[in-house]
Length: 157
Image 1 (cartoon, rainbow, N blue to C red):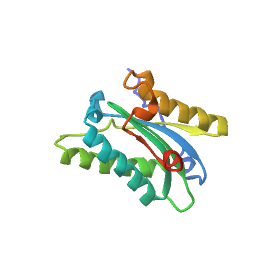
Image 2: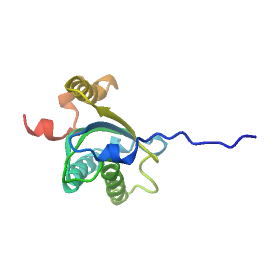
Image 3: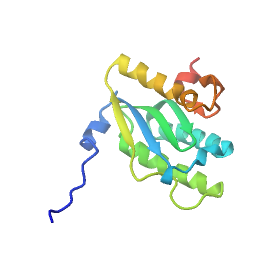
Image 4: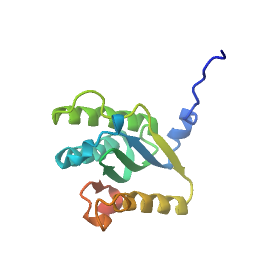
């Protein structure tokens, strides 16, 4: 029987450290558990994501916490850590928040999906996708009514 190889899902780590790059990130919860159906937990995790990105020198343009996954648009800056470092920190700190809310075990799936946003059109599509997610899921009729959306683009309005 031939050996099994794991398909590499990450770019070279240096690609995630390039200043000025923007990324759409999707992170699933462990076993797709609807942990963010708990609004208090989601509110605390949203604030923590904003705080950890700022502490790491990344710009959190937008986030949306769906019941069983999270979407973020994150920009890597010159003074900050790379995207993989930021996501590792966010997952670690948010898991501790979850434990304080009574959760047990891992909160997140092992990895995450990323998509580099190379053009303004890519960026605009990613924002529309993120904001429309709770509408497409039937959670609200207007994205602005969804309580677990935030980030810099909303702070600037």
